[in-house]
Length: 185
Ligand SMILES: [Zn+2]
Image 1 (cartoon, helix red, strand yellow):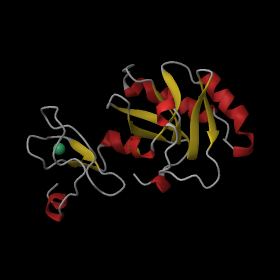
Image 2 (tube, helix red, strand yellow):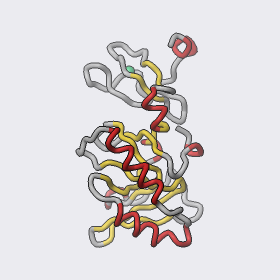
Image 3 (cartoon, protein in one colour):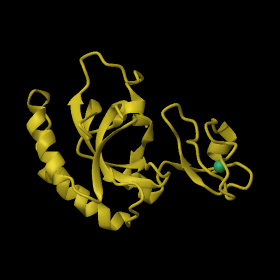
């Protein structure tokens, strides 16, 4: 989805690290940096003028992107179980105003416990609002051969990368739907 539509305090369907789509709470829709100091993750607002596409030291685990709370990879829990916890967190999280971000981040780090994690992710991993994802609104049946996936479009209106029925990458990943394919749904 488009970056400008991503709102703080809302729950979105996000591509998890293990390719499973998970609900995730967006803490702030502005750019954040994650770095590591003495093995501990630190979070701070990106410098003014920082660009979305600018990569920082990914090898060292530093990232730039959207600040979210999401389930830890590998801990599969039913969304019905996860959503109320994310909603409670959304309600109890103070507004992240940048000049005083340190105390809010510290509070979040203390509050966000396993099985959740506070993290910074690329905006391209955010698929759509969780509610739309659950109801299937905005998902398109993939017209690819041997593929019955229902797929969201990315910010450039192409089908997101996905696997076909045999688990291999679908050849229609990252392609546009034709007018005919759009209307035959
Ligand atoms: Zn497909």
